[in-house]
Image 1 (cartoon, rainbow, N blue to C red):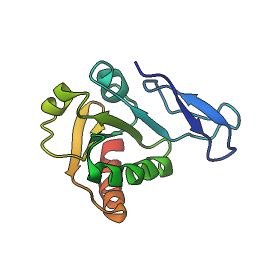
Image 2 (cartoon, rainbow, N blue to C red):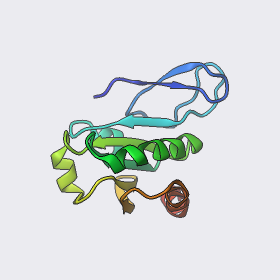
Image 3 (cartoon, rainbow, N blue to C red):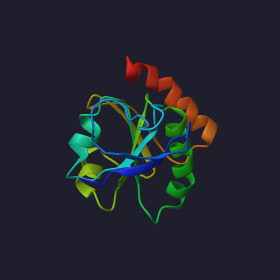
Image 4 (cartoon, helix red, strand yellow):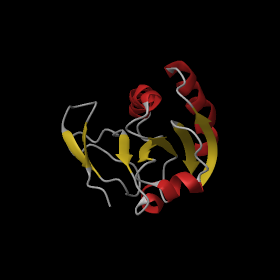
Length: 146
């Protein structure tokens, strides 16, 4: 399983360790504010990190050589940061996880898949602009969170 990520609290600025797979929602150990949850996953820990998550998960299938992926990455990270406690972002390198790419039928990257309690609820492929991606998340997140 991946090492805990270091996440800076948007409220007080303290750095916190956030594990890729955990129950509940991450909170700052200093001030108690809800933290954004951004992590990575591979084939070995996908079930624990994504499918067993208590929060809806936006899975970003990407690859390091993919130009559109580099455009989308900061946008999806910003969206996840703006939705602490409501959305978990998990990045999956398609080159390192070919079985997951096959399982999800990934034909192009970047592909974003919104998963709630282990079930896919929405997907989008391609480098959409920030407003369109945020609208896509907003449109599907209430249904996923219900």
